[in-house]
Each structure stands twice: as C-alpha cells, then as structure tokens.
Amino acid sequence: MRYIFRFILMLVALAALAVVGYAFVGDLSPERSTTETPVMLEVN
Image (cartoon, rainbow, N blue to C red):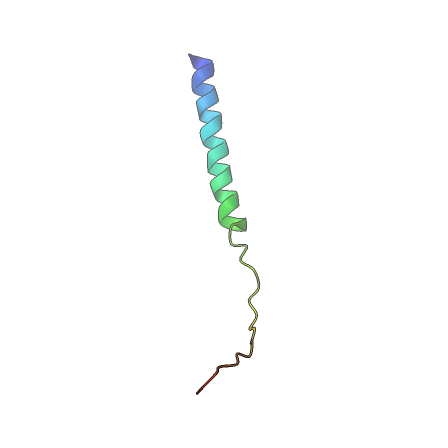
C-alpha cells in the first residue's frame, strides 16, 4: 500500500511540474504580420 501511495504522490508531483512548465513556455504564439491582398470587384 505504501508503494501505491508513493507512486500516486510522484504522479501528482510530475503533474504539478508539468503545469508550472506549461505556464512558463505555454505562450508560444506566432509573430503577427499584416498582409494586404488587392481584390478586384466587378461593378456594373
């Protein structure tokens, strides 16, 4: 029973480290740039 408790405690600790790591590295949004494309409209 002690080994199962230790295993669950290790999983909780690893999950906490994963959440902290994601908090630091999780904002990996791409750089934004403006793109302009001309559009030809047919007007009668």
